Length: 74
Image (tube, rainbow, N blue to C red; front, side, top):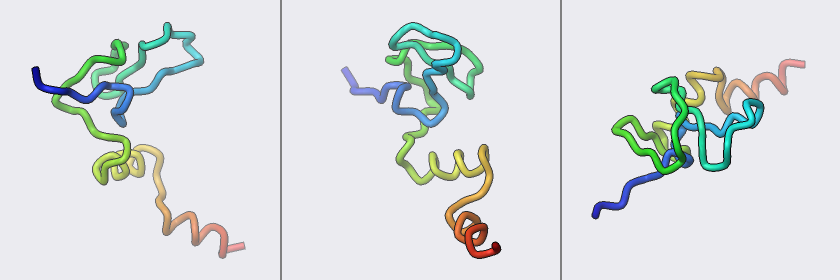
């Protein structure tokens, strides 16, 4: 059986503590659904991958360069 990455390692997956979800369950913002942490899909993006970093920058805006500029603009 092929080893697959778990959703809790995916950039799309988060545990949503404010929704008081059960342990091992999280929300996938790609599918807009709740899944068990062992779910896997073709849209998996590792949180530590370059693609994952780009996804987070696109979602939350900014980047390292902008953070440095904000500190020096005072």
